[in-house]
Image (cartoon, rainbow, N blue to C red; front, side, top):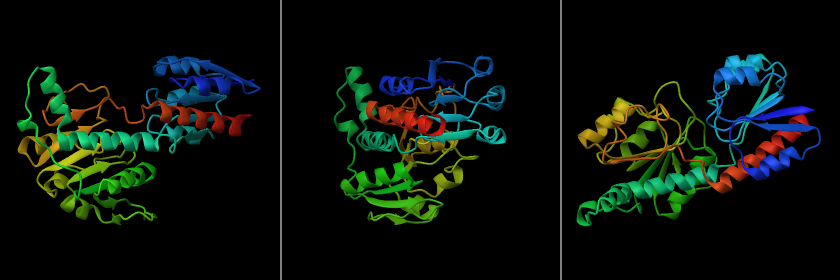
Length: 299
């Protein structure tokens, strides 16, 4: 039997399909830390995770029979790919499954930021009526700067164009697209964007730090639905406090869950607990893609 460990929650339909594959023995055991994973993983041929469980080098080295590690989602920052490569273990993910999910979430945050939805909700729940104080702006004819334009960035660009926005893209890879967007250097995005949204993998250092904030337009809005650490949180807070940054909508943080809530408590920050891919449809697509990958590689 091929033994598969599901270490994070997964859609029931995908689990049922996986369990129905001849020769597959599926075990669901979630919420494990490194030491428990090290004790559990021996004997398994595959491990499936989402974003919570970390497959570190000690875990991977303990899996003497491991053939494949799969993340049901975008990115691989919770899997030690170098350790897997050293042992000849395949590493896979499902980058296309939640692209629309994350793009829609990004646009929701963008709309909320320009129209001050977060402050309005808090105000109303405190039984205040602050209609005049919460006046916002339109997205129409504003310039959106997209940093990182892979699958998600392209989906965000499509929606921005539908709103009548101008779209500037920065990416280290030339973008092939028929969309009415312009790929430019980062400095041009920083100088011209009214809103900047990021869609990049985990980085060794922030893409937006103190120097980058200094080159942005006054009143810039920052939306980060990528990974914690791609925006320098101290520099962002300084920008919010000075007024250079009008608002920030953040789905991700340096540490999750956060320990320091100073940035989160800022009145012009809309904080979200990493919900970018958390939609039923996206998770279903991700689960079904995991089933396809495992059948292709192991069945």
